[in-house]
Image (cartoon, rainbow, N blue to C red; front, side, top):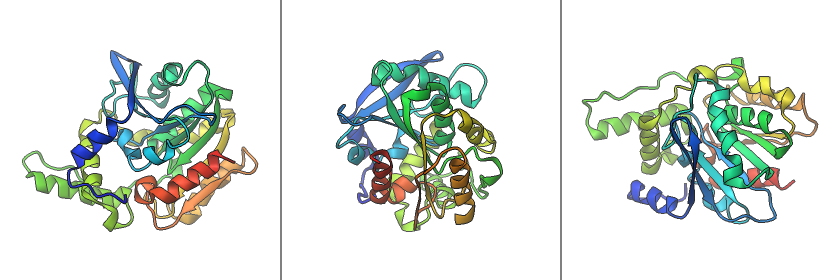
Length: 287
C-alpha cells in the first residue's frame, strides 16, 4: 500500500466507518457485508476475500474501486465477524448464505460482477454457478480450486500462546513472506496486523477444499464472462507456466478470456500492487 499507518487498528476502524454495514441471516447468526460507494449505471461489484481472511483482504482497493460504482465486500461464513454456515464444511454450504443475501444487499435480482481472491475465488465459483445470468463477470484472483495446479505452501507456523506479542507478530510477518507477499518491503505493520487478526478469528479450515478441483468443476455451468488476475510470484500458483495453464482451462469454456499476470507481485496481489490491480480489474469489468 502507499499508506503505512502508524496505528493499523485506527486506520481500519476509520475506513470501516465510511462503509454501510448490512447484515443477513447466516446459520444461527448473521453474515456481515460492507458497502462502499453508491449505486450507479455501472454493474455493482462483489469482492470475496481469501481463506483465514475477512473483508480486509481488499483494504487497499475498496475506496478506489468504489469511485464510480457500488462495491460490496463481506466476511464470508465462519470468517471475520460473520457467523458460521450451517451444515458440513463444504464449498456449497459456505456459498449458500452469500447467495441468499444477494437480494438484501444489491436489490432483487440485480445483476452483479464478482471477483474472488484465493479461497474466495473457489467460493465465488459456487456463487457464479448458482446465480446463472444474474452474474455478468466472474474474475478469479489467485484462486484455489485447481487441484494439481494449486501449490501447497510449506513453512507456515502457528505462534505459541506463551510467546510475546512481538514474537507472535514476527511469525505472522514470516508467514506473509512465505504465502502472501513477494516483496518483503510491502509487508508493513498494517499487513501484519490484518493477517494476525484474520487468522485469529477464522473458524473455517479451507486448505483441504483449496487443494480440490472445486472451481474447475463449476466452469461448465457458469454463464458469466470468465477472467483471471494473478501475481506472477504467487506462492500457490506454481510459476508463470502453471498460471497460464489456468488461463487455458478458462479458455476451454469461453472465447477471449481476459487473463492478466501482474509482475513483481505475489499471492495477495491486490494489496501488494493495488494501483496496477485496480486498473486491471476495472479494465476487465469495463470491456
